[in-house]
Length: 448
Ligand code: C2G
Image (cartoon, rainbow, N blue to C red; front, side, top):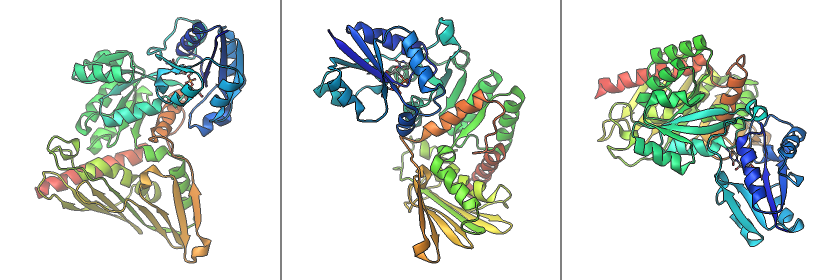
């Protein structure tokens, strides 16, 4: 008898799950399905699981392919199960290709092509339909975000748009997306929400058209470069009852949220200073996005991150920022320092694509300071330091993968619960960031 095993969360049981189990069963005579526990899903960074373990087991059972159902509750369980149950074939979807090759020592490992379009005609499954996410742009950031989508339940990337059809098609093939488009309207017709990761200057138009077509929008930072554009988009989202979120991943990460709560709780006293640095050396190249003449440069590329802790901790009521801009031989800034004066506090942003510095975040208060070492924007640990170093405290929270799964999870929750407020990055804060970008571009232009 040929024994097959497969594992999964099987949340919001859908056509992709059913087809996977059907094909897994067809590979042998006896199918064992491992269903993950809540605790294990939390541990492995799976977000937004909706159904209880019992319900997920019931759904797997009622689809009729499993001969036996077991529970998976820790990372190293698979090797043990393969041995214990005398397994011949381990099966999983192709979104995990390569990950489980270590099992080849114990059994055959088969990656079955994942189902690209999970819409189903089965009524019971249809009720649980996932949000169909369309990807705008097919560069590196889109790739990274895509690799995170599979960790969020209730959403599935199905389509990609690129004005160059060949690029869209190559991307769809590589990431097993159902459809590739070069016509934006057709693309919008096929999705429920879009993730915009195209060049900065195109965000506004893509976001506007998506909202007008009734689609939710998650837009890479900087969402827009002009204050009135930000206002217009948020008004449009409000009028249409759609979700519009600026994708600054740090804003949604547990450790960063913990840092904000710690700083706001008065632990370091009254905050007088926030200093945020982000530098990323990029070789000078006129073809690189970072050096694109009008909207490239270190500040537009990186400052959204730095502005985040400033607006979160000190608010949005600052005087016009003062910029020190260094251009070297390029059209754009390779290093910028920006000063923000609040009524009784100051903040500094340092960004560099041609100058390297320690990428730290430092929040100074009357009783102590909070320090997050580089790379602070991928916040994992932070330290609260006092006059007496013996009193210092360390905090930690995981930041799995590339970290986009938190913002994607919030995007899904905000879509499913329309009354929910996006307190992690408010409309006002996002608009304030656009105001800063606009001011910066004005100043930089004036200087050229
Ligand atoms: N799947 C699929 N097509 C989809 C979605 C999922 O073929 N559109 C497959 C997955 O590749 C997996 C199974 O269905 O083989 C269950 O998917 P999930 O519930 O998302 O579970 P997953 O997180 O993939 O867990 O130990 C757990 C395993 O590592 C897999």
